[in-house]
Length: 335
Ligand code: F6P
Image 1 (cartoon, rainbow, N blue to C red):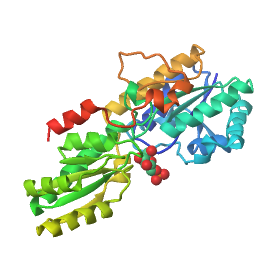
Image 2 (cartoon, helix red, strand yellow):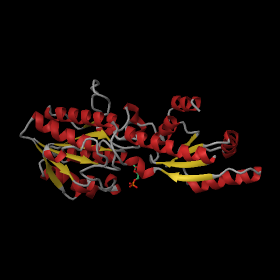
Image 3 (cartoon, rainbow, N blue to C red):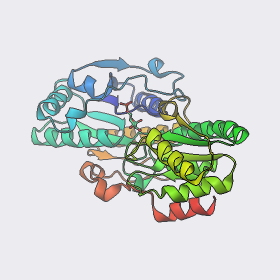
C-alpha cells in the first residue's frame, strides 16, 4: 500500500507524535508499505511536494513541538475548486491509497471538500483525519484536539509567571490568549491558573462590574481575553482606565500577549499518547480498507468508530463554539 501523511493549519504539539506513529505502525505492521510525508501541509498537496519517510526519519520526534513536515496555510483551498482539483489529482497521480491528516477546523473542511471530489472522480484514495489544533474547535463534542492540552500546560505556566509580578506590583493584567473563535484555550487556562475573569468571543462585557471586582480585590487581577473577542487589549484597557478615572481611583493596568508562545514547545504526555494512538488506529483501519472518516482523540482503551467526514466538517453538529454552561458555572464557583 502507499500512504501519505499531512499536518495542516496552525502547528500544535503532538503533530510530530502523530507523524511518527503513522510511519512506525505502518512499517511495523507491513514492511512493504511506502509512506510519504506531504511537505508544508495543504500547500504541498496542491503543488505535489512529497518526501518519502522511513523509521529513521521520525526518530526522536514524539515530544518535539511544531511539525517536521511543515504547514503552510492555504485559506482559499476551502472554496477554490481549482486548488481542490489539483490536490485530488496529485493523490491520484501518486497512487496514494490513504492520506492521513492531522489538523484543525479548516483542515477538516478542506479534507471533506477534497474527499467529495475524489469520490466524484472515482479516485481510489481515502482520507482519514484526526483533530490537531490548540483551539479545540474541531468536533469538540467528541473530545479535545491534539495539542490542546500541551497549549494549556504552557498557558498555565505563563499565567503563573504573570501572577508573580502582578501580585508584587498590585497590578491588573489583561492577557491575550489564542484560540480563534473558540474560547476553550482561554477559558480552560483561566480555570487552571485561577485567573479572575475570562472574556469570551461575543461576550457582552459589563465593564463597571469588572472595575468593581478589580477594586474589591485590590491585589493582582488577571483577566484573560480570548482571541475572538471583538475588542483588542488596548481598547479594553482604555475603557477600564476611564472608569477608574471617573471613580477617582488608581489601578495600574498592563497588557501581555501569550499567543504564539502557547503554540510552541514540548508536547504534553497526554497529547503524545492520544496522537500516537489515533494514528495507530488509523493505520490499522487503513489496512482493513476503511472508508474515509474523522477520528476523535481519546485515550487508549476506547476505540471510537470514525465519524463520516461530512458530519465532522459540520460545526453545527459536532462542535461547541461557546463554552457549555456547566463549565462556566464550574469556573465561577472556583473564583
Ligand atoms: O488555529 C491555531 C491558531 O494558533 C489560532 O489560535 C490562531 O487564530 C491562528 O492559528 C494564528 O494563525 P497564524 O499562525 O497564521 O497567525
